[in-house]
Length: 370
Ligand code: NAD
Image: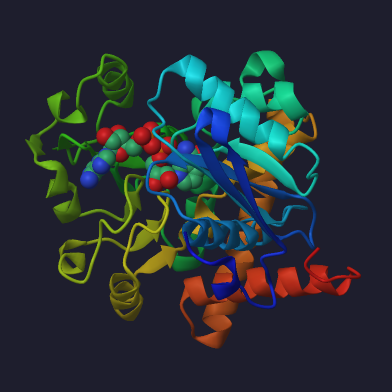
């Protein structure tokens, strides 16, 4: 395990807590990075290869994401070192045990992440009363069902279109990764008159310059099939989506899908990033130099965490959508204005915006980060 003394700076971490329950064979770590803006929100990740160092990096990413989203929450993250596919009864003991061990720590609010889900969050809520990403039956807003992140992505796209003089009505959209984020982004954008000309998933791509039938694609996905089996003028392998000529190209699948070696295949004007770190730094710079506008992930895909923060205060679904709309519209506008004014990449402007908000919050606190 990484030695906690080897990471950290003036922004955090405020706390690193190691939990061990030998009877269960459980080992876990909580990193509360920075709570200047309010109690931290971040996911509980369960995997066999997690480390305290990784947990710290993820907690820091949450500090920046929550600050960039303008939420009254700092960043934290927790990890359990174990196989998330262990028998459910055993997993329930692990999650409940870990939550109970951290129950007194009001600086951290659990959320779902890789290896955990709504049901795990319900167990946490039952143990300690502090979690987000809950099932509807216990006060949750099912953010993937309602399309919270896809909605925010569509709002970010609308704002950016105005800036580059692109009419969203009739704009051609390609979606890489027709899953929870991608399909809702497609739905909200098509409501604004955009035409979804291509979509892909892990098994293939379907494209049609005349526009795809989104309802038919949803039916295919619900039946466990690939979008590539859908009706379109052409279909191809997973990476064929990279070559589709369009106005708006949305990554909503995996990290590092666009790199220095394939970035030249993209033919688009605007990239609102739905996935986390979908492009390498070099690929993003190349697009910037080519004049392609990229809205960075932690600004464009914040709809999910905004929804979770609204759920935490008991807000309704309608209020959650209103908060996503307001926060994402304002943040995208501010980031793109600052980037243009200073001649820098939107990612650099977004980072400065988040850091400035964290610093201002720290100035109001006796201990800065805590
Ligand atoms: P998901 O599993 O519902 O959907 C992912 C889709 O991508 C699937 O259709 C899958 O087949 C497809 N896919 C996988 N590898 C691919 C590849 N190489 N090429 C094309 N398609 C591929 O996941 P999701 O919840 O929609 O999340 C997508 C991304 O967005 C992830 O990076 C996630 O971390 C990020 N994200 C999600 C949310 C959220 O609210 N769900 C919020 C912020 C960020």
